[in-house]
Amino acid sequence: MQEEPLGLMLYGYSEEHAMTIRESLSDLLGGRVILMSASGREEEKVGGILEDHEKGMFVEGEVCFAMLLGFTDQQIKDTLRGFPGDEGITRPIFTTLTPTNADWTISQLVADLREEEAYFKKMRERRSNGKGPE
Image (cartoon, rainbow, N blue to C red; front, side, top):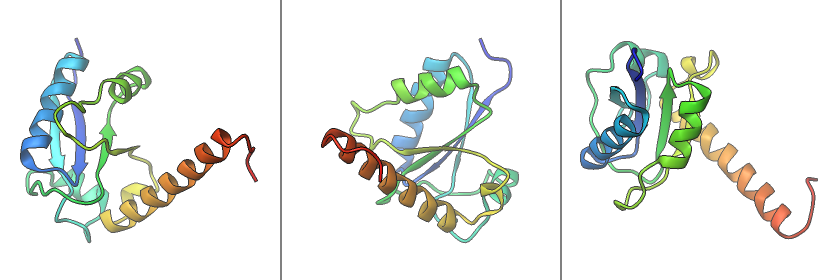
């Protein structure tokens, strides 16, 4: 059983889906998960949202991300494997807090995550076609 609560910053999820995600991860990881939303806060910095995580709203969006805060390597692996999906919940782009992205706005973070996702998708497609990296 974990002692310190874990943090989970979500973007692009309805409140219903956000609550399902929190409950699922709390059960999976055996402890409390503090939930915060970055939706509707696109021009705020990630670090600012972490400091003032009480406000915010859950809004479904085209892009979804989940920032895992305070997770151990094993908890990250468990989350990646056990993320709820049977409930019609979109699988997010997973990320963690870094000194660099703490100073980014949510819009900047979303743009970076989308760019990384496109790059890795392209690399997976190349591998599946029998081609190595360029």
